[in-house]
Length: 184
Image (tube, rainbow, N blue to C red; front, top):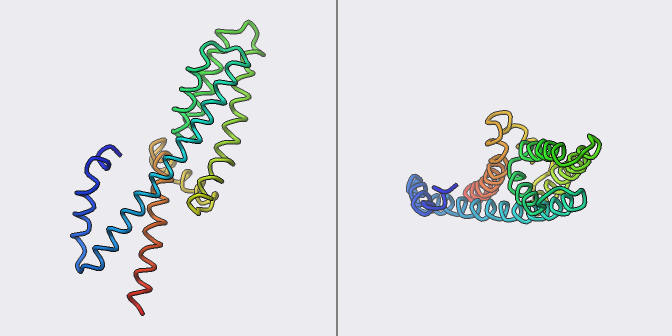
């Protein structure tokens, strides 16, 4: 991602040169620009969702009585960028700190159980619905993409699944309109 941000113009120009004809190069540039904009919107939306999740984590830590709620908010918001694995790490961390902070096992389970509920609701319903609506993607297709790429590449694949899906949908949309114009 960092290399893309640094060298995007050079890469896009090189890809456009690969195509013969001025029209095909322009279509390639439009595909790359549109995919870049949509993926940026996706990450921006994800940042807002994770910021909201961080605020919920801070509130949860305060209500339950965990030390340093700001730390819990930052940790929750950051870890949630890693689908499935990030929330799982957060649950385990909440449980371990709960064991160290509280005298009873029941009290140690409160924060992890609430967090499982919150992240399940966020990860399985709220985020796919927002991303799907904003990018006109089917939430089930988002789930399948995450499942497939997580299976293929693990947590890194899960992180890259939606941007890859967005780029593929953008490319298909542009190529189908290009081919329709070219056929007529």
